[in-house]
Image (cartoon, rainbow, N blue to C red; front, top):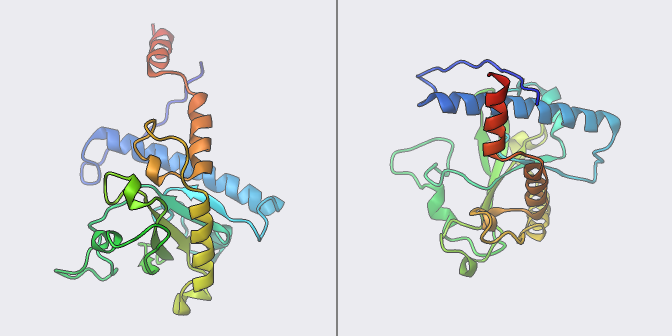
Length: 224
């Protein structure tokens, strides 16, 4: 087994424990790989203009974002879908004392309903449209926030003033609902928030992993 040692820096003001710094480094490397794959798909024409690619996770916090228009061009037909999110965030990007938290709005969502699209801006000035969508009926979940996903899309230049067109948001939302309900109940605590293609992809990738026990023993053998 070949091992690659990757250095990372633990910064106490950013990370509570060293493990979080390692996770942040691993996520950065993963995003580098995702963006490289996306760039190759766009250049080779594999990602057609009538297809949408789903990134598992948030797009707002990609460290690779240059803040330039060229970076957004890569994500023209890309959305980010998060199975977990912070329900305590305010509905407005302008945080106000006593303002409405997004969790209060999400409790109102019925199956197939979504929130309005919220405008979010990251520290690089990149604007995103963010909305929440219920893909699993309330009657099938034990936690009222289960079955809800967060969807993100980079705003194009044409969308900065008028916002992302409603028909685009509705079409994406309907497509995501149709990709829901994977048969992983009891095998993944996030089952109600899973999209079937993402669940299958995760299952395929994890099937190639060795168990923790086998990995640790091989790791020890290399250093004896």
